[in-house]
Amino acid sequence: MVTSGATPAARYRFADAAGVCETIPTMIDIAATAEALAVTALGGALDSVKQGKLDLNAEQAQFVAAARAEEQAHYAVLTGAGAKALTLNFTLPDTKIVTDVPTFLNTVIGLEEAFIAAYLAAAQELAILNQPNLVQLAMQIGGVECEHRAHARFYAISAGVLSGVPNNVAFEPAMFTSVGAAASALTQLGWIGGKGTPISYPGPGAIDNSGVTQLQP
Image 1 (cartoon, rainbow, N blue to C red):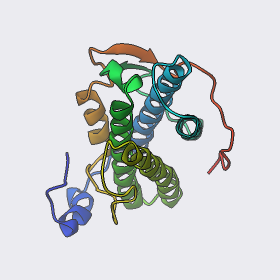
Image 2: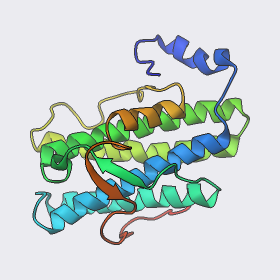
Image 3: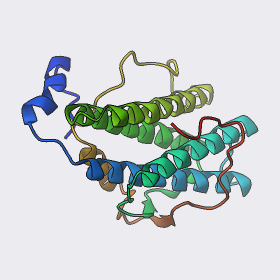
Image 4: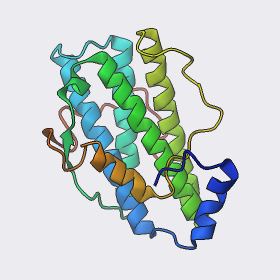
């Protein structure tokens, strides 16, 4: 369920009023699924760059490689904690995502916004469940997703795809009231069980951790 139309106070009250939270296994399984999708999609984009099908410059490709390494680190920590991705087989909704720069950048921004919102929902539910360590992990991961979003916006603005500033929000939108709602959104967008090109985790190419530190929380 998307809550963008609710007042801030109403959003903050929602989970408490609901009285029911998703289970921890459910939340981390969904998170692992999203991270696996990110690793896979970014791997496909980097492979397209290598083949000359996606016109990213060296700096942009380095950003994508680092982002992929970070998503893989998230996946490794989540699965190391017992998470199991709901699927490791995905579908690419549109081949232009890995061949057309504006489509790629807009897609990265959209996915990152969904991931940020999912971790916000997770943090709220985990707080209600009195799991401060997992709240911290959710915010550690969500913070990195925010960095990915801002960087992708920077490149999109530089390319004339978007206008404005990269860091354009004072508060990240809380689009979901549950982590499961984020999974539903990925399905509706065609990334899971869609009719597009099948892609499987981890995607082509090795993970490159160059320049990436703090691979553990």
